[in-house]
Image 1 (cartoon, rainbow, N blue to C red):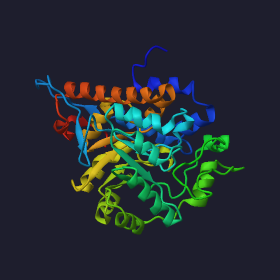
Image 2: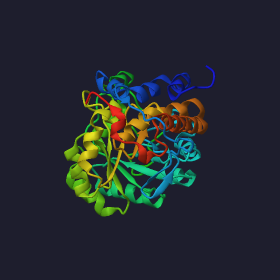
Image 3: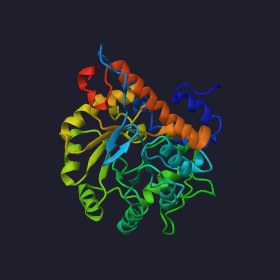
Image 4: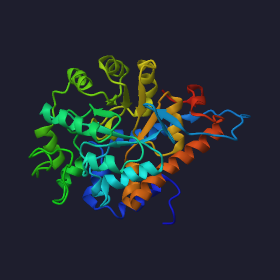
Length: 360
């Protein structure tokens, strides 16, 4: 293949380099993968009713999130086990994101310690948190993220148990011996067990993560950190409103990339309702199926403050390391800039729901 023309062409490049079980892990969705497909399709169902005769000689994609200026409203979503895609793993990802002027969210399930990623970061670094049964271990992880320079926490709430990803079950997915979960230091937390009838990740979740997670725990988390908290995994306006009431600084409209509850709504279809439920009191981000700058534009016109992208970043990482990550993020920024010009919206603040027509 010649140089990729769009982010999906990076997928083919990465697929040729990443080992098959790891590739299945990255691409899989839950059960029949209905939601996985719906996430992508939903953005395509939204029409853009563009404006004309607007001066677009000076177009900007810059935005501000949590007080920091970013080159675009695209944030690297938390995804696990980057060293399965590239030997430098999360270090390459954070360098690539920084070169593009984008914030990165580091997963709890990282193959690289948060301290090392923090040292390599030259753009905002956020930390995604899973809550373990051991609250002391969870609190220690939050303290480490703060000390490493993370500027926001992203609490994942849509995985009280792990969705069944049949590709991973078939492959008996686990980490190779030379890799571990580097952010959990206590014995037994850094390794993934072998599971004779399931994936190793499902066994890890079942034994260590807390299925009793509730609103009380969000309140507890807000009480032990000064960092803003984004609650990730929200698809309902009432849940979004309650998250802010309890102490969150915002929400991420997300169905975990179609990897948890199959049949859950495509995120594009519920974004506007969540934005209206938040009533401007906090940040709203969205992920799921974003592959083009026009998808980013549609999300912002629906009221989101930004989008998160996961799989495309892994494609860039697998294809070309840090440079591939930068190129994927720059492609999305460039496409967004062009879409703004063609829609008559030189600034992100010019994007509004009247630009859109959709089935919902």
